[in-house]
Amino acid sequence: MLSAQGLSVSAIGKTFRSGGQTVQALDDISLSLPAGKVGVLLGPSGCGKSTLLRMVAGLEKPSEGAITLNGRAVNQPGRDRGMVFQDYTSFPWLSVRSNVAYGLEINGDRDALNEGTVDHFIRAVGLEKFADAYPHQLSGGMRQRVAIARTLANYPELVLMDEPFGALDPETRWQMQDLLLNVVRKEQNTVLVVTHDIEEALYLGDVVFFLSRHPGRLKETIHTDFKALLPRNDREAFLQSEDYRRLEIHIRRLMRDEGRDAA
Amino acid sequence: MTAKLSDKATQQAMIPATPTGKQRQKRSDYWFDFNQSIPAGQRLVLGAAGWAAFLLLWQVTSQMDLAPDRLYPGPAAVFSSLQELFLEKGFFSDVVSSVTRIVISFAIAIVIALPIGLLMGSFARVDSLLNPLLGAWRYLPAPAFIPLLLMWLGTGDTQKITLLLMGVVFFLVIMLADVTRQTPRVLIETAKTLGGGRRIILWTVLFRHSLPGYVDTCRQMLAVSWTYLVIAEIVAATDGIGAMMMRAKRFVHVDDIMAGIVTIGVLGLLFDVLFRLIYRKCFPYLGRAQS
Image (cartoon, rainbow over all chains, first blue to last red; front, side):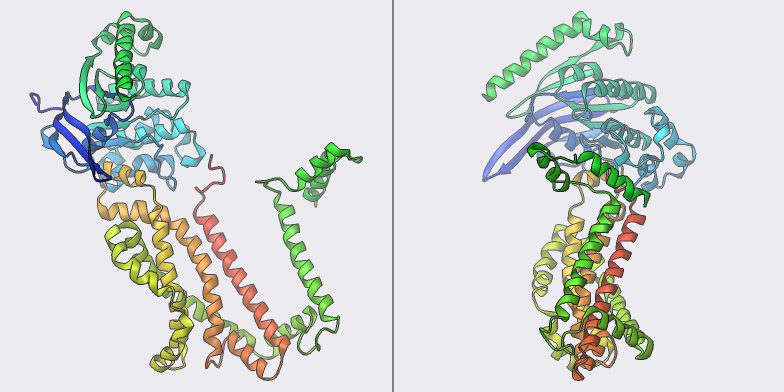
């Protein structure tokens, strides 16, 4: 609320009606993510982190509270908030290049198309050899790279990602995490990622929002400033650092407590 | 030819000359396993074998004196009368008028059904408004309207095309709506978060995603159209394949009637192949390797 730039979520609540009963999915969540930072929504399954992300995207409406992006109220989906989904959502009838160009095409953004934006982002995710391939010819990791390039090529002010690498094998997931960090650092994107993977949350996030469940509440906000002192793109140094280990154990305990409540 | 030889070679390689119990098991696995994909050459041979068996059965039974030749002619007699029909009796113009009726009525059906089906499949409120109405009309047999259509539209082509249209259009609307409804929600949401408005998403996602399904549905409904054609042309028609068959019945020319049936079958098959070709040419991205 203090800075107009970036994402601001204030006092968000969400209730569902199911079978005559009212279920409180999210309760009084307030957080802010400054422009140019990577934020992570972390929590056990059922904590409503995906619901929160979808509300930021405008795909669902909050029951209470308000969301603003760079000072503007969010109440429907828009070009300013691009989203990468867990399923590798490429348009199967479009080539990789046309998939990446899709957002600019439907917005009639001739300038960006003429400036070579599409090729720039295809190169950024390392798919230049596959620009003319169709999605069904690509692996899951490559298809997710298409989705990332398509989202970034549209120049959103905020990039939303819903467990983007959850269905990938570990090796590919690590590669994708580095690739994502490299691209968004270069483009200075503001990013909000949902994950339930602690390592991924700490590796990607400048700030990690830990949500509890039933109902989903913001339990703790964790800053990962310690990474500034570490060499970039060095996963081993990251995993071996004192701070990482301390935070990992801390979050693991938070997760375990949540599990105990549910059992 | 070489393909066939190599098929035989692999076949022999896989089947030893002296089958023991265990190996006999393997042989039956070779012929009948679940989810098998077989070489294109073998598929053609098997398809031709089915036809050959049918024609042979027809030929043999027609020579067995089960019925007089006049009432149950063999395949050879039917093919020679088919030839005669085309070369001497001007059957070609009958075929042209039948095909014209099919094409015109089906084109009108698509023009009506596509926008309605697209909107029904896209918007729940349009669906709730029209589905109970159109869904019920599907169950009214089109031929039951023939007396009405004769009174309203006379005996000309308009009446016949309307009958064909009525037989197909309600099914087509409901089926095209079903195809549209299968568009994955996440593709629609992706387009929304890229800034797509309703109109853009309707065309670039829902319509575009459904297009292969539309073509396939049309292919299947066209077959239904052919069944209504004969009914349409039996009633008060002077030309067309069905009219020819009714004329032939009056003079007990069973071979001509059968020739008409064969013609309809071949035409139906041709249209089917045409639609399959369109499908394969237009949607190369539907690779079989959907892994």
